[in-house]
Image 1 (cartoon, rainbow, N blue to C red):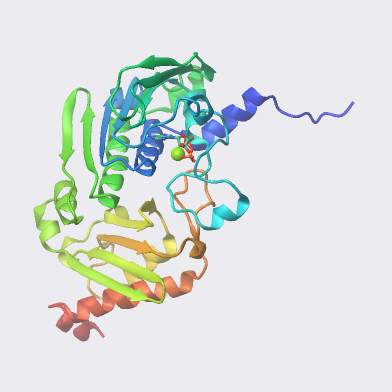
Image 2 (tube, rainbow, N blue to C red):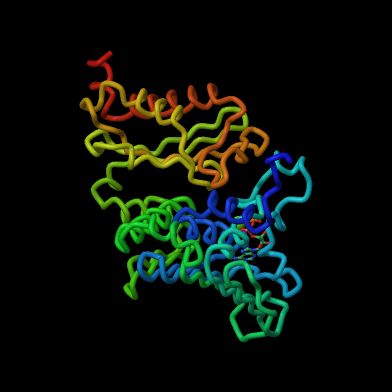
Length: 339
Ligand code: ADP
Ligand code: MG
């Protein structure tokens, strides 16, 4: 007898869920991204006990049709992708059709949703992957997700979670990334019953940077922008005097998606060379918009890493754009002295 066997669907789902949902902040990220993909102009986020007991996200987006509601929670079920070729023209934040299934597998979820052309809403509850029949309910146009008792059915994973305040901190960080990437969306954040942020829609990210990083840093920002062929780089870099002891003040958004990229982090450091003391890191908020076929976002289950078709070209563009901005500013003389 051989020793290899195919895993049961339950085990496969648990493994897949583990890749997407690591902690409450991962749930918040996925639900926020879904709300943005649904075209919401307002999203309210609330957590209790750092999200361990409750995560509630309400949006005013286009809602989910009653026939689609059970499907939305099936693994690999999505409205955002139809064929393999679509993977190279992704214009939405989601596309893997995994998040809702993963979340429903490891928590108790209730979803109420209504589309604009529907007189009433529908509601579904799913407990550890088992769905209740759909009921009709009264609710505004949009979608509300309530996620309770995260990892209650996987006690070992629950013990990996940190204290309420640490988890709330991770949620707040996730919230700030989305708030910086999408300033035109009105966002609120409540933690333990307290309103932490109420961020009205604004056109630029400057106001939001001030909220999260303080007025002094926001006032020191230098605008950078360049467009080379179809690669549009824009955003703000902070004055060297605002540097930090870690790279935590560096934000890169590719097509509105927060990503980490070591190579571009290096390009940024290179641009500041000679302007920072040893051990200090620059602060920057950079957006990169490029055609979907120039970037592969399907590298990582949580999509926090991406692969550029021509990373070297983007590296050079970033370095040159920031350098030119410094040369045109009052940092000119310091750069020359260091040259
Ligand atoms: P993905 O986002 O990769 O498509 P998800 O599991 O996150 O996968 O969501 C599955 C589907 O459920 C989405 O494709 C979308 O059609 C629907 N959906 C999820 N959240 C919302 C929402 N807040 N508003 C409208 N539709 C939603
Ligand atoms: Mg999604």
